Image 1: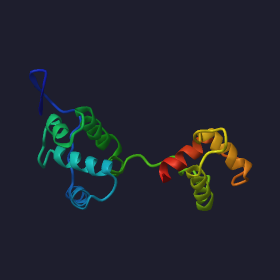
Image 2 (image 1 turned 90 degrees about the vertical axis):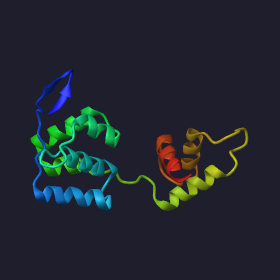
Image 3 (image 1 turned 120 degrees about the vertical axis):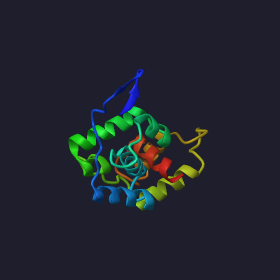
Length: 155
């Protein structure tokens, strides 16, 4: 139970973990196995376990630097969708998009970006760089946004 607006109320979604689930959560937390989100979810589930620490949502939120709504949603997800879904999150609906530029193309673009800009320009703009890359036939077509992501990642 936790205190809300001056009175005690019953939690709507109760976290009751099996021994195997507790062991899995312990491994994730101890070895920091998985993404930071997964580790945080594991920590929250472990502290919310009614047969374990049984912390309040407010105490859990304060301990792990999140909102009480986050703790409530994790509880709800566990009850409605199950342990694996709650711990690992939703699976991707589509695979990640393939890279648009290969390593050689990226290297040539970065080298061009680090070189002085063409006459009449003080700096390389992304649009100028994208036009020049196509003009030099490094790639057939490329958007300035693709170049922005590539340069942000590399430089």
